[in-house]
Image 1 (spheres, rainbow, N blue to C red):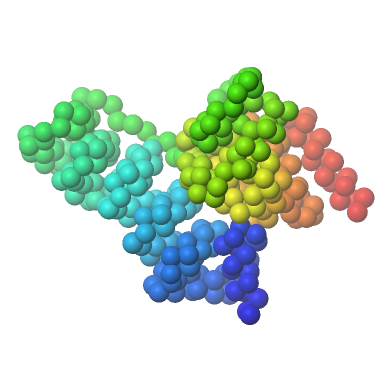
Image 2: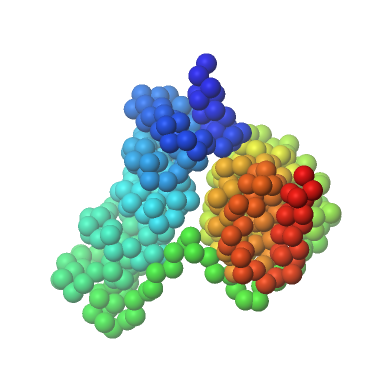
Length: 368
């Protein structure tokens, strides 16, 4: 079997990182594109995972093909990949605005609302006639923040025929913003995280006498209790069947419930779930510092060399605790000499603990 095909399968299973050589990852993307056109469901799922792991400009075209896939689960994979791509993924999110799965389309629209995206205007105008009032209202809301006066008359026409009270309010709010009667929102990109200052880790929850039965409640508890109280909860979660665990993984997303996200990271670490490296990696850009720290710790433990560049980006985080977690994870996932090639964002580091970790890494490299 071709070694590159073996590596492709390992990446799909979360057991390896993508190649860096142009010719090699281009061949992988070609295989992924073939799967988009003729592969079975498992092959298409694997193809999206591999393409998302490769990332960058070349991957976007392949992901765009999967944004039209007949399987809603694969289209959700595309949405998650688009979010992880940051600014480069916006074009994919625009494509998903017209998805048949309304919940998926609403989620894509929520990200475009955060960046106050003007490039989705033509699609948003079509969504004003959507069957679901939530889509009509959300589309009108974003148009109110981005459109010019030329849209006032069309919006008024839509308002005159709208029957849903909540959507009426959204359309009227959009008209008011375009007309200068209400302020417009400023862009708040989800890939630019700003931690509150000062930030302190949340108080650890007490371990209850009886553990909850609901998996989501168990996972949330795992994300709240002290490290010494985690074993029993992690054991209960590890005993769940594969379908229940997949549901927990899919519920973890950037901007979601922090205790759920932290719990998933802790569980990934406790279970050694290397195949969860991709969903955990996405949480590195979460707006909650505790989630970012937990994601770093999980990736350091389960071993995911492909996340080195994501960890490098966190070395510029506003919080020293996050920078330290990212540095420790970087040290764990790649060889020491490679890790030290990524630390240039720390050239003006002032935190003594981060500086001590950096000095220890350099000393360890010199010692061989």
